Image (cartoon, rainbow, N blue to C red):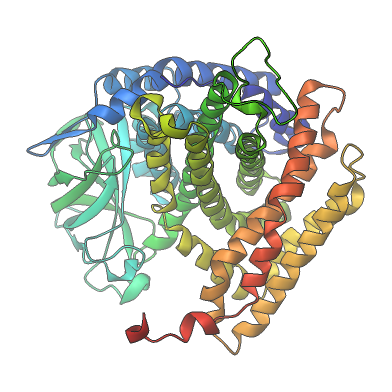
Length: 589
């Protein structure tokens, strides 16, 4: 069975040395009671539950999968007991509002824990992750009565949450949804419709499931302007908080999938189910996006988590597997052959994994920091600045983390050769589990369109220039003594990204297709530049005299020499225009 050890040393380095969280958390009104010692303790205990409780269920959960029988969904053996351990130890409410029973921990910390969860057991993690996201939407937009009724039980984990957006005929274009909400005589609304691909829509882990459902009122305007958001419990909740009768919510079937087999992906039917409006009528999509920014970062963490365990297992295999001799001569003369770690191509794969994982972990913390600042900074201007950065960075984090996370899992599989294709070694499961992260919560192509179209072109680069100024000031303020080439390369690629940004904005006025044609390559260019910024921040504070510091410096040098050069190819494709994409007719395909 694959082994996993949470990368606590790297997480602590990022929090304490790179982002100086002790000072930051004292500044924010929401985190003043959080200390580095407390954060270390939480991460250490989180590592234990991930390594000891969840990891052992990962392969067996994949083999068994969820079972469906006449509307009842059963999770794999061991999941229910693990879930009880998880919630009884307070992990579900780790980031929740203390007013309603949560623990109020910063997103920077909960993101680190989420990464561990995804490494240990991706399918299991999706259940509490969806609950956390649902809590965010309820907390931000629901009435006080709904928050008081539902949040404590959801933070406790006794009730779970699910997000119901997609319908059989529409996914990305939610303006086409047909689910209806009719005002009920007794108050609230009657919700009728069918939703598909609903993660955790039905399961046997929690006493109740709280569905957040997008639907349209009778007088709704056409398109996305007519979408409202409703809270629909699987089981009705009585006035005293106890559970009552069923609520017209049923599971029609579960999907049989390539990966994440122990996560129930459900077809959900709502038949005059009683629901409650969250937020204002016809403003449901905006309310849902409160949840989506966090959920998209969470799915990005899925890519990082699976990439990390794939790397750890590939590295362990490479150290043990003997095959051939080093080009410079035998390194392990007492053995019939050297370990494959002596071969440059194996090192290329492992270092690519390591460089992407560590760059991503730092960028995830940086993005989470913006969420924390946007929520709790006492200065309104700082909150607004952080909120703007969240908008810009979220599609990059979701798409780039998951694209590179999948690549990293494939590399891990490749290091194992034929064993990487065999179930017992575990690597093929990581490839299968990682693949979905590029698709759900908005496909990565949609993330790229969101970045290029909404977050860059539509505001004439205003959000981008905020990021550009921050990185530029940082680059000018540092010498990067352990790795002097960092300064020049960071500034060079930042200017390359700026040039592409301005040229696409300019061309978009005369060619509407330029946004779509440039978007994916632009996101990859942005991701590489952002990772370069993260590596620069790490190198600027690393201690070169330590083994940890030397590992960082050498990994950063590999990133600059062997990965970053891809940026110029992406820039070339961004600037190539849309003509070659759009010239071919439908008949010529």
